[in-house]
Length: 384
Ligand SMILES: CCCCCCCCCCCCC/C=C/C(=O)SCCNC(=O)CCNC(=O)[C@H](O)C(C)(C)COP(=O)(O)OP(=O)(O)OC[C@H]1O[C@@H](n2cnc3c(N)ncnc32)[C@H](O)[C@@H]1OP(=O)(O)O
Image (tube, rainbow, N blue to C red; front, side, top):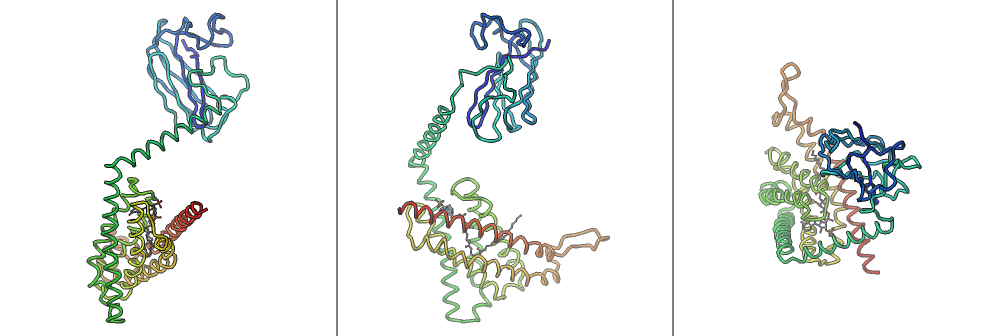
């Protein structure tokens, strides 16, 4: 026999809760509950346990379809009902079942408070408010505020835990210090050599600097993990673009081609890379202790404006210089069936990479511009 179960509902700004009572009752227009029993009343004689199987709850285009099979005092029953929600909901539905009921949670497509649950004005006879979870809109808003305050209290308590804060701060400070020392050595070394040897220093940058640059750029992969694991509050994508972008140039274009080692472009790329890092890493070091030096903050969020396009331009020159070399030595060429040429030169990959570079530049330029606005807007707001 197919029965329509009793369904109790409540809402919050982002969710709808349905409590489906599976009993041996058949509730319908023609056969309402006996007068001495009201929906949800504990005295309902129908509250007999039902052993459930094959629960199927789906949402398609605002309509929730519920089906289940249950074995109760009156034998095996099919249970089903459907509801057309007032507004769109997300297709993902979660539910938990007990002997007597199935608790369903549906997420609203758009956050907000509904005047009723279903499209039709007159509610279905099997539907009733769930007074165990019922809140008026203002109460729900207060519940959200209380949850947020609890979360903030927990977060600040966690950050005050001596172990948590010191470990993360110590790790970040040490990382930033090592990177600052590495890039400072690079920047000072290249500056001094430029003053002493003039233009000649442009041709042996790779031989004098690359070991430390390889070390710093390999270590920089940690920044992607920091972003991915939430160690620092920043996006994974910009960090990934930054680290992959630099290491592609360093390891593939410079590191794998001897012919590139004596090119002046190596000097410009290394110099532009280190010119930002000598401000960025000390800025992070101070940030580990929630302090800042205004001039350093300004430099960290300003010098990238000329350096980033210049840096990517220098990298593009390096890629263009490497293309004929890869064509000649066939390094990293992609093997293809003889019928279609035997191999694809890596220079084709480089031509595609040139497009990625300028896409990556656009993404990170926009990201840093947002960071700069956020940083200086926050400062302005604190100053007022
Ligand atoms: C399928 C693969 C596709 C790959 C495609 C690749 C294409 C590549 C194209 C582009 C290639 C670019 C190559 C690079 C060129 C150059 O570098 S040119 C030289 C100039 N370069 C720069 O100026 C960029 C310098 N780098 C950065 O700024 C970062 O790497 C960044 C990721 C680009 C931006 O940094 P981000 O962390 O996102 O912003 P911030 O405002 O600095 O930090 C946000 C918050 O996080 C905290 N934080 C971050 N890191 C640390 C840390 N190490 N220690 C402590 N705290 C850290 C920071 O303090 C901020 O905190 P709040 O202020 O409290 O929010």
